[in-house]
Length: 331
Image 1 (cartoon, rainbow, N blue to C red):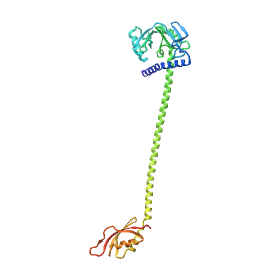
Image 2 (image 1 turned 90 degrees about the vertical axis):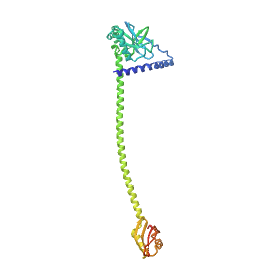
Image 3 (image 1 turned 45 degrees about the horizontal axis):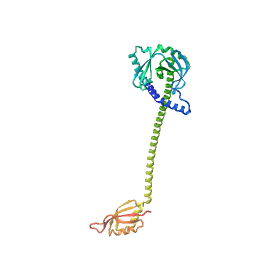
Image 4 (image 1 turned 90 degrees about the horizontal axis):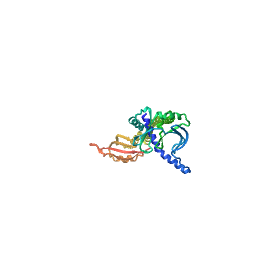
């Protein structure tokens, strides 16, 4: 409940801060239209009662409000030297009445009101219930309904704030009902907006989660497809390399037949190695091993024959040990 009071105090402060600007704007518009501004207390009677003047009050900030003006006995107290929120002013006023008057709170009305002599001060009025209740009961049945209550103070009409009237008398309960209806409508709008926003966030979060799952699944599938493609590319590259190597290579049998055909009978081989298009032969020559270079170069299958290690003479023999590398021409 205190939180609600604080909200209403803030709303009262906001309304009091913005009202002068709205009044100035309305006066400017009336001057622009060529109409004279309305007086703050322009009164047109809408009924009278003993001790009351019930009037249709039109002010710069409020139009078409029927108000009752109380002219009976009352007490006025200053509650603070500064402007206070309504709820705080009501607490101080109740404590001041109990301290400075012999009246019981059940027998009086404590009504915080603005101080016309000093806008920076907070004051309140004390009125006995038996003086004002009968008159309020008379105007409760009047139409239009009384929406404002003013107190004549030193020749001026001081209008009480609506919050001071809501629980004052059944004649003003419609103000509370209107305010409660307004708060209920605002609460419904706020709840509906909050529920809609929460539903939107829930749907958005669920959609985000679902999208993340779909994206992750697609990424996993993409990685699997990429892995398969890489494997396929490697397999294709290996097959292509093997095919190309096979196309460019010379069969071992053909190399062996050519070596057998061109090598002289006084030379024999102890080892032969084929690496791609390169052939390395190792063996012995009974005569000069250097003569084998020319013999190998004269073949149509071999080229670029050369020694890859020094020629070594065999001790006690006339032959030479050789190691020759040569290139095989593609078919």
